[in-house]
Image (cartoon, rainbow, N blue to C red; front, side):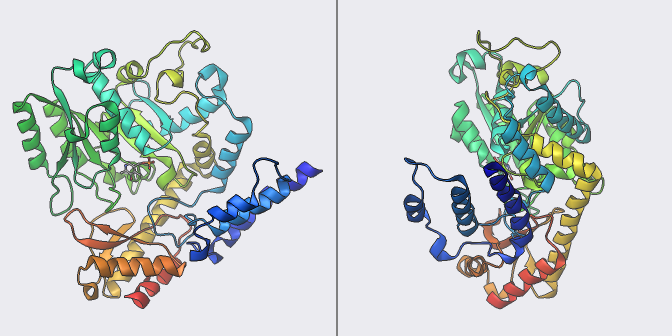
Length: 461
Ligand SMILES: *Cc1c(COP(=O)(O)O)cnc(C)c1O
């Protein structure tokens, strides 16, 4: 009986929270921000507690002291609302707790994941058989996987002797505005933070190809090795898409690895309408695409794709006496990825895609793109200026009254966040100008939510 009551509480909470979300504040009341003392006092790890009481206490605090990213007026950075099938998928992963290190121990889990990965491979224009892919904790792990794989591909000795064994210093090129996880990857791999080259952007905020060519040439004359060019498909600050076809051609000519960081934008490949914006992605040697950004599943779920199967298997290979034997014709993830013990990360993605269908999922993406257009036109009609160029629903904007003042722009963003009625942020564009930014992050955002935001903006300007 006890069990049923607490399980019913969980089901009720899933239903109630989803139903009530748009009546809640997005941001906590300032008095609830610091919940540390309350948690110290209310919960005792020494003696334990009755589960129902604990459940009530925990959900109360999660509701009160969290920025609710699943709110339809969360116009923040790509932390989405989550679909019901994906919540169920994540709960099942917790319940069965399958160990995905080895195929033979979790074949159902891994084949659910493979079905999703294969769909993406096909849509990205990869050959399903000769390429390789895996779920990751997020985009940062996928980007790190790309750097390790590229190093292993070009320098077979890298794995054995490390970077000191190389005769040339490898270098990574990325546009100003590309993601900083590559800085961490350079640190972790031993490549060194100083060997990331930030490439200037054009007036349309995309990577400047001429500047990139020059930087590569200069590095070659100094006996450095142009290892990888990162093209971003949907930058974090501005939603910019680098010219992927041109980057593909350039990298083929230079014999350099092209990695496309499509952590947010890659989801668009599922939509026949939106995928044209990713043209050229098929030329990438590897791709990062996060499911936990625009595919509306819980964190953390990233995906790494690579057309060089052998290099990936070489980079992450390992053998032990204690791991189970390999299954012929199958890949064991502990032997082909960074992680070892691994959660069924992709089950929530499989559940969501299998429930909605690719077409249903594409419908959500297209709805969000439409809401982005609606936001742009609503802002323009109220005298705001759009400061970015993105086909995706990420809108940077400012108002003449704010006079390009960083302080004024931040004041407006803060006022909106403090109101608890919507969440937006302020950013610095790649040319240094300050701007406000609103992203259609939730598939549940409707015109009335956009209207609400535009009204708030008029109030606080
Ligand atoms: C979010 C993001 C990342 C990092 O991904 P995580 O899932 O947060 O690890 C990398 N690149 C881009 C372009 C991103 O938007």
